[in-house]
Image 1: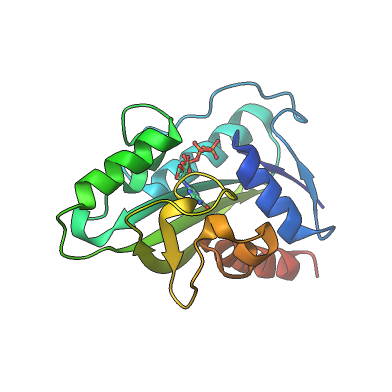
Image 2 (image 1 turned 180 degrees about the horizontal axis):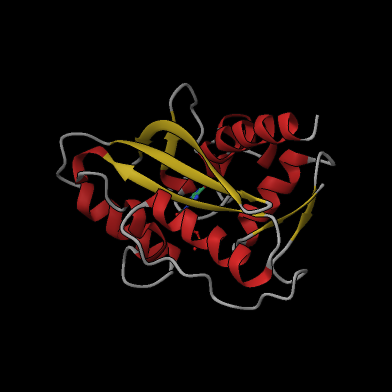
Amino acid sequence: MELCFATNNQHKLDEVAAWLGDLFTLKTLRDIGCTDELPETTNSISGNSRQKADYVWTHFGVSCFADDSGLEAEALNGEPGVNSAHYSGSRDTARNIQKLLTNLSSAGSRRARFVTVFTLVLHGVEHQFEGIVEGQILEEPRGNGGFGYDPVFLPDGSDRTFAEMSMVEKNAISHRSRALAKMVAYLKEQVK
Ligand code: ITT
């Protein structure tokens, strides 16, 4: 089965491709001739996820799925959340992390969670799948792997940040792979 992953984020594409193996044939936006910036204008992770998948289905008629993700810090009432990509006002990762660390500097809790919502549009029928991983935000970044907030996120039960793990290790426990596992189970039911 061919499915387009509606993302412009190469890191997400790499993680999902590594996880999926040859279960499904992944098409990129470029593969289907989409060079558009996907809309992300709602105020929720699930809303933005739906918006991106709906855009591809509506404009290109291709079965697809989208990922919207965010980091939710308990002491910041769920910030950066839906604003994770542009938290500092730009997509600059170092500045986004710096703003998060500054905002948490006097906070009572460093608890946080990563959330991913996948929206699958399969032949026009839509389903959502959520994945969550709990952990805490460190005071200093550690590690060079991964992307985004990975260097400051220490998942529960681990002494290494996501950025100190290989992609395979991150994929074993990440929010994205948990959402993906649910989506794959659903897809396997559909193609039985
Ligand atoms: P697409 O919308 O094209 O898929 P994006 O990078 O804009 O790509 P999001 O809107 O979902 O993706 O933005 C979420 C941001 O949250 C992302 O840019 C990262 O900064 C952060 N993020 C998401 N998943 C992450 C992960 O697994 N590890 C670290 N940071 C992550």
